[in-house]
Image 1 (cartoon, helix red, strand yellow):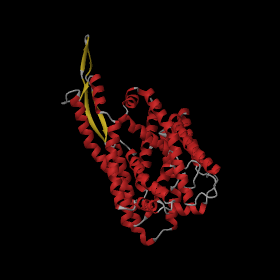
Image 2 (cartoon, helix red, strand yellow):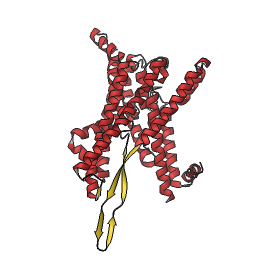
Image 3 (tube, rainbow, N blue to C red):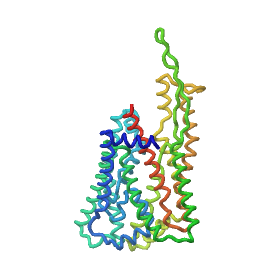
Image 4 (cartoon, one colour):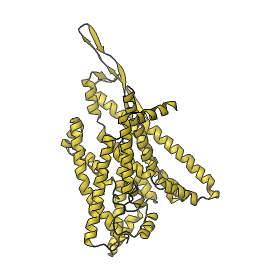
Length: 423
C-alpha cells in the first residue's frame, strides 16, 4: 500500500507524468461530451424502446463507446478504425509487401502500416454509417428527414469516427496507454451508474441468493481473466560464450516469455464482427415489403444471441480467430533467426529450423488454453442468460474482458513510466 501511494505521489510531482495523466483525463472528458451531442431528427421515445429490445445494437454500443445510447455524433465510435486495422492485419497474410512493411521495416514500417489503416477507416465509416442510419430510419427512429439531412448526418458520423480515431492516437502518443482501448473502456464504464441504479430500483429480496451467485461468478471471472492474461510460458535461452583477445564475453542465461493469450481481446472483436453482419443485413432487409426478402430477414434476425446455435458459432469463431491472430502477429521463424544471429540458443534444441519448430509446438499448446478460455468468457453471459432468463447479462463477458485487459495494460504502462523516472 505504501508503494502504491509513493507511485501516486511521484505521478503528481513529476511534471511529465502529470501532463500525460491530465491529457488522458481531458481527452476522455471531450469524448464523453461529444457522446452527449445527438444528430438531428431523433425520436427519443422510439429510440429508447428500440434499444431496450435490441441486443444487436447493445453490442455495437460497446465499440462505439456508448455513443449509440442517444445516437450521438460519434455513434460509430472507433469501430471503423478497429475494422480497418483488422483488415490490414489480414492482408499481411495475402500481400507479402505489407508483411515486409509490418514486420521487417521497424518503426518506420509500422507508421506506414498505421497510415494505411487510417485511410481505410474513412470508406469503412461511410459504409457503416450509411447502413446504420438506414436501419434507424426504417425503424422510425430518425424521422422527417430530407435528402440533405441524410447526407448531413452521414458526414457528421464519418467525421465523428475520424475524430475519435485521431483523439485515440493523440492519447497513445501524449498520454499513457492505448488511446483506442481507453475510449472503449470509458464507454463501457460510463454505463455502470445507470446499470447500478436500474439494479437498485428493481431489487427483489427473494432474488438475493441469485445476486450473490452472480457476484461470486463475476469475481471468479475477473480473477480468471487476470490469471490468463498475465500467464506466460518461459522458454530458457542461453547465450554462447565468445572469446575476444584475453577476455570472455557472453554466456548469460535468460528466458523467452510466451504469453498464453497472445491475441488479447482481438478474437472476440473478429467473431462479433462476423456474427453481427447477418443481423445487420436482416434488420436492413426488414424495411422491404417483398415476401422473399422478408423471409430472409426473419431467418437472419432469428439468428440472435439467445439461440444455442449463436453461442456455438460464437465459441468456435473465437477459438479459431485466437489461433489465426496469434499466427499473424507471432512469427517463430523470425524469432529463431534473431536468436541465432545474436548467438543465443534454447538448451537441447538445435538452432535454426529445430528452434522454430519447438517454439511453434509450445505456442500451439499454450494457445489452446487461451483460445478455450476466451471462447468460454465470450459465451458465459449467454449461458447464464439461458439458465436464469435475465437478459441484462448478455454483454457482461465481453465488457469485463475489455475492461480488465485495458486496466492491466494501463497499470503496466504507468509502472513503466514510474520506473523510468525512479532510475
